[in-house]
Image (tube, rainbow, N blue to C red; front, side, top):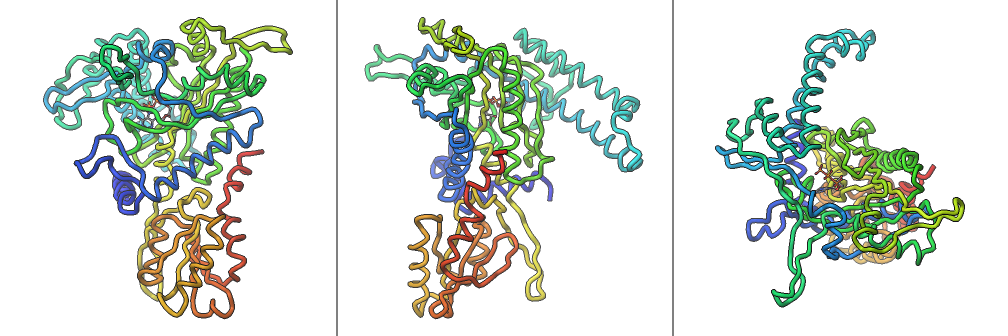
Length: 517
Ligand code: ATP
């Protein structure tokens, strides 16, 4: 199936099965804003718990906070967001469509890169085991020419961004002959900067009201609480502060479902370290975060690091963890070495000392910071992209297909479906009795409508790892049929074994142990 079709199917499936709905759909929707439905919110909560526990539970020196979305407006001056949280935008005069100029150039570069990959694939298929990619890259004329093109464009692009030279960004778009995907024309406006922060008013009387912003990242809530947490928690460097919360960005282009939203959620951790030790910690956090991703058991080839070509002015190292979504390799998480930029800025703008006394070094300093920042919604999309499967099955001599969400059992929205075979003969009562006993420890669902086969399919479609069926024999032998989502195998087990089996496969501890080495 083409990847674009997979993406469309995931969007349709998310709606049909109560994972994600367009916000305000009743009123034709609000662009790039989404609501999570009954199963979506469970999955989201489980992802949050996996992240939170991996930070706060597994690390003695990481604590969590929950800061307010509204903050003093000076915070955003200090952080640089008022002055520089911009994206360069450009419009096509014919289609009237708006684009991010940097994204147009990046997509152009990806196309050239794809040409190189194709040459490599062809040659690799031709030469088999004898193929030497490095040598091929160094000698094949077409690859060399395309690589030179990429290097040249990147150099101009980075230098234009660094010097804020928007005319040069436009020139680059023209020189690369980039066309609007809708109109097909090269009739572009000038490039302009657009600030992504949402502004609103605080206070009821308009003359007294002051402008404040909806936070565009959760990180600043951590920085301004650095001293509070360090002092009240008697934290010693190195230590971290974690937070999960909403962030808001007035994105210029937001057409990729929950990949790019205007209201989204971030899971961020700022790790405070001694100056000079930051790059060592940066390397450690890169590795730890990749382990967190890999523990989910998806194909490791779908993950890669992408080091930033252009570092933000405050960073001395930065990388993204990219994942191969059906829409291509895209950022899911950023890991940044932010130096002492943020704390220094807040010290300067607030006029209050933000320093740490290091008893081992016997001196004061402003800590350096390593940040790990992952989008909860992008992580959600990553899981759905991996989990969605249309499987062909042979049953009773017939070929059939089923849609199954192979969500890691630990994150599945529902862990167990309890199904009475019939809606009579005391089977529903027995099923409810079992459910009422399990519901304190296991997230269960009860379903009695439709045939058992249909009910299994419905559970497959929402990713429930196990179903148990209560039949007439259950009333006498106290056993149920346990059905496994992935293998579709069924086995008869005593009712009092259900909890142990289900928890054994779905407990978050399984995942956490995989990242703890
Ligand atoms: P992008 O380059 O995709 O715009 P970014 O580099 O601006 O992302 P960061 O500021 O590093 O993103 O934010 C950290 C994480 O927050 C990202 O890795 C991403 O997972 C998530 N994120 C950022 N913007 C959005 C958005 N508009 N919608 C959903 N998630 C987002």
